[in-house]
Length: 242
Image 1 (tube, one colour):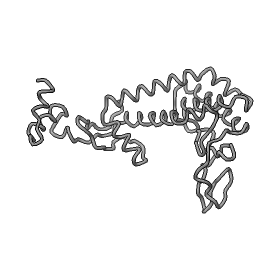
Image 2 (cartoon, one colour):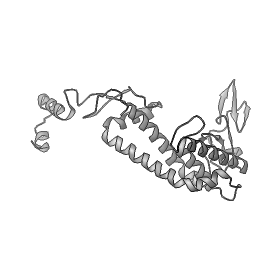
Image 3 (cartoon, one colour):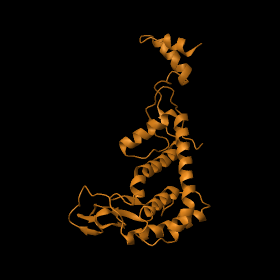
Image 4 (cartoon, rainbow, N blue to C red):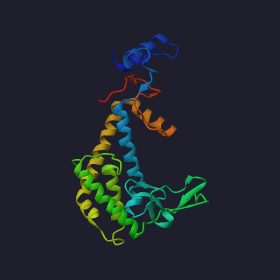
């Protein structure tokens, strides 16, 4: 039977025929409305996708040598653009009725609109040192991209390299930047590979995109076992590590 002829036989009031279509294409009577259950693979792919989206959103600014206010670079800190430096705490962090702004605790929450800026030479030195540590840690892990406690893997190293590259002449390049110049091409290749893997996974799993969309709307991570409203042909599989 041709697909065209089968869909032509489905009428708005033809409940039996529509149900038959659900069975053929969705695997059962619930195939058209079945919820999608998030898998372990979905959760891992969502993490990778999130890191890639951060890279994409910050690339142009970092390559121009600037950093957005409150942008966090793992292993370096949160950037406070008005004072051109990185700190342990985020801009505007509230604690005990005080706020952490521009490296100090005060009683004012700080401005809601702070423009990006170029880090100071001292701040760039922090980035260079962190980049050196990150590369050593990656080497000890066999070069694998890991989201370890004090760093964020190849994507994080690539961001630091972009920032330092955009500020040539503003600081004295150290071992981190010099070594990164030889590795940046491989990091970009890995990011491109990750991007293709996410795209292929999304194409093969129709419910994955819906899970990511729901995650962004709620501001929560994609977790295995979650159910999301599925569309035509969505899967009702349980969690899986495949």
